[in-house]
Length: 243
DNA sequence: AACACATTCAACCGCAGTCCC
DNA sequence: CGGGACTGCGGTTGAATGTGT
Image (cartoon, rainbow, N blue to C red):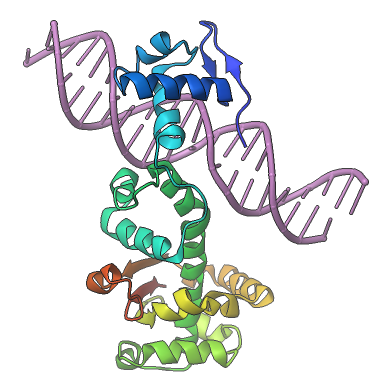
């Protein structure tokens, strides 16, 4: 999973690092420390630019770097910190000794971000289904939302009715669901996203584009204290769907 | 077995901030 | 103060690898 090595017109190499290059870089920094990155390759005998040397050291060779899969707790913390800090990967990485910002950024894009996108779809569907059952705004915002949503999913509620889709555009409310369902059981999404049903929903949304989704957004509001105590049971996701 | 498509992750690129002359 | 050099960050790329058909 590495780019093939190549040389520019000045003889500067780019692409995959060889073991010999790694050893040279490691040996030089062990002996002289991280000094001037621009000058380093010259003195270390590397045909690389300083930037490439720094990147290789910071993301791969530096002692103490941890590789391998992220744990569930690490994933929770990434989500929490990303909600607080946004795409400040280096700031997020400070909370993960041994993990690099590059690693966390990659993990976010490869795992969490994708899943969030799917969860957004779930929010739209669940909210629409609640609407078809004529639940009031009060009911939507009450403490029973978690079970209401779960019931919708468990009852295998039919796909959105055309009548519901013809409702006038409006903000149909904010709901909350217990993130524990999603995080600890993982069934929240899988149970909901039947491929055929999803296609029906998307098809109907296309047909009724005048009342289509204006924007979907989802943000995680995680109880800080509980997160720091590694207790995620009381954390909540807040989803808002505007139609 | 062969091919197509999806995923992973090391590496690159451009830009902004900081430092120094 | 201005400008160049350097560093660090975040977004993106693309080849290797994995998975599905």
